[in-house]
Amino acid sequence: MSKLFGTDGVRGEAVTELDCETVMRLGRAVAGIAIANKNGGRAKVLIGKDTRASSDVLEAALEAGICSVGADVYVLGVVPTQGVSYLTELYSADAGIMITASHSAPEYNGIKIFSRTGFKISQKEEEELEQLVADDDWQKLTVGGKHLGRIYYEEKAEWDYIRRVVHSVECDLRGLKIALDCANGAAARYAKRIFEGMGASCVLMGCSPDGYNINVGCGTNDLRALQEAVVHRHCDVGFAFDGDGGKCIAIDEKGGVVDGDKQLAVFAKFLRVQGKLNSNTVVATVMSNYGLTQFGEREGINVAAAAVGSGSVLDRMLRFGYNLGGEQNGHIIFFDFEKIGDGEITAVRFCEVLKKTRRRASELASIMETCPQIAINVPMPASKKCIWAEDEQLRNMVTEYKKKLGHDGRIIVRESGTESVVRIMLEGKKTGVITEYAQNIAARLGEVMSTKTEKELETEKMLREIKQERDEGLSILPALKT
Image 1 (cartoon, rainbow, N blue to C red):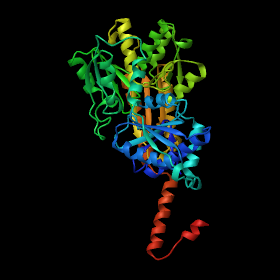
Image 2 (image 1 turned 135 degrees about the vertical axis):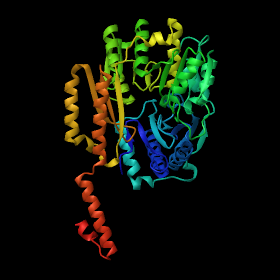
Image 3 (image 1 turned 135 degrees about the horizontal axis):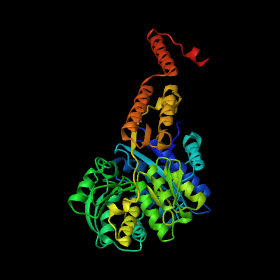
């Protein structure tokens, strides 16, 4: 069986790739471990989901798997991912599961799993789950009769989550006019109640999910409509969320983009002034803009760089006791209040900074100057995973460009942990130069992806020979087995 977990849970094209049988087996595995760790009583597993049509299908498969081994399911309904993290701990559940593919297109879906503490499970725990999913003998150990698990519905989940967001700040939002693009995702169920409930005047967008429009031309994937709304409707600020509500990109009153890096700068300075920035440090990633590092040097704030991925950021925060971290994509973690990022908490806390500093959003964002940055994604066939990096011409090209940029720029070429692409990122003082370099690297990567290796050619040749032998009424299979 191929590896299930990537850098952020399980993900794939829903039902066809991430199929119901696999999801049901995963439900059994999660419940099996929960039961083994339970000291008496029946294990309790929470399930939340985003608004994709496939989320209902995968939820049913998970429920069947969990109940079939004797654990109970508690359904949260549509809720942001942070809601599952928080409510798993609040409700003393043994595990929590979120069905979502975050910012990905509607045809994709995924599964994120949380331990009873509300943290995402560790890599070791993921490996244990994968072993149980692949173990056919273990998967047959189901129960029946009175031992069968039951399905319950947590009717208070929505308001328990809303209260969590509202209580994350020490002020109301009266006097602010805010535009909100909820990406037709999980945040669409909550944004109006949260922000208007806190006193803000709201312009709502992306709040009509139909199961197939999540992340399509809206949310963090496409900011244009939100930028236009903020400017034309004279809003103080706008916020775009992704499909599961985990990320938040802000738009200032002039229509400027305040991405995760700029938000980290704003929050870091605000917390430091209040004496609440642990170790005077903010955790970013190696993909964060160099402008954030320059901001830190100027303000006397340490910017620690973690590997790409919210899990890597959180690991660095846990290891050294830092309380603020995040990524350029708008996934911000306030560890004093949450164990994973939550877009709506990020948004209300940004509004808190606006109110307490009495400054405009554009003024806040101006504390960090963004260095020119070019990013290109190159599609990667499954057969090229890891192999593309062995291309000597590509390696030489990247090495040469790094030497030419020197200390005035950066080049990062890496596989995505959530999509079948290789990500190229270049920074430098001259936009024209880094654009040329990025395009050249992308062109070479495209050639590598489309060129078949000797192994692939050999496999194709063998398949042709098998077909020819079969057509002739012969068989070379015995020879292949030897």
